[in-house]
Image (cartoon, rainbow, N blue to C red):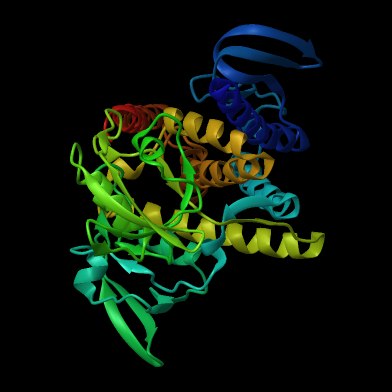
Length: 432
């Protein structure tokens, strides 16, 4: 099913992208010879007018083949060839594909808010700090439990979603953070640390999460010891517990050792002894419990959904641009990039979470696809635009040899990047 969801996401986004090129080419009077969903050998197809519509064997992409588009082709002088059109029309045809993906992102996001989805309740709550991990970037910066984050990187922060997004997008970067502490405002300098596995920023800041058990897995140590959903953890081995992370860390760090847990159940205090077992998958101690994480289903009317969808997509747009700037300035680890395997995993997870989460993921990927394709890299749409701008300035196109060299370099760079992110994907499957 994960593969099916992945193909649905890629298929829709590629179709929309290529449809943008197709429609604008037709509008400009360019003859479109092929419109393919996928690359490689044709599986099925039919021809209508001048255009052959087909589905090809490799589903990771697609293309529109316009007459006279390839610089290797000798122009015939036909007025319906791509090269016969003015530069400005060719630029519009080139950018319409990526722009269509960006427009799709803005169109899908309001549907997410209209349909509604379950989200952790704290994400929309004020970013009041419930816990600061010892030794973390936040700990070193002087954050304290109870601090209310109000501004970060000169951006207003009114909930945890914005705070966590800014932290994730700015590893190893100084962030001025304005907090409110005991009625007074204070500015702290935070430098999020890069996660060694993903490269995204981490600060060690957590919202308030009460140490309440939400579920107990059958056959696991917690069930055998008598722990039940709804139990509130009071202490572990005599040390008071006020936040779920304290309880989680105690479990992780005591593999194979008996620990005594005091819990409150129906106004009664009970003591249980449990021995955490090592998870071969995760590599640390577990007892088979999950936190009681409160979720909310948020739905909005049409007007409010449009407003929130636009605002949310603009935030994602800004974060994507910020990440690209940091990536090209070597301030962001390439480990943070994900490829087809990550997209497939996220597609499956989002589909299982519901239609709203699936559309949210599709919107985010469509936005990134549109922005990335506008980069001035040969073999991308942005690269073609770059060639056309040079042609407009020089009053004549680049030589065929120059374009071939540039495209070869661009193709090699993209293949290298694809290999790296695919390696990242594979490592994420095995390294925890």
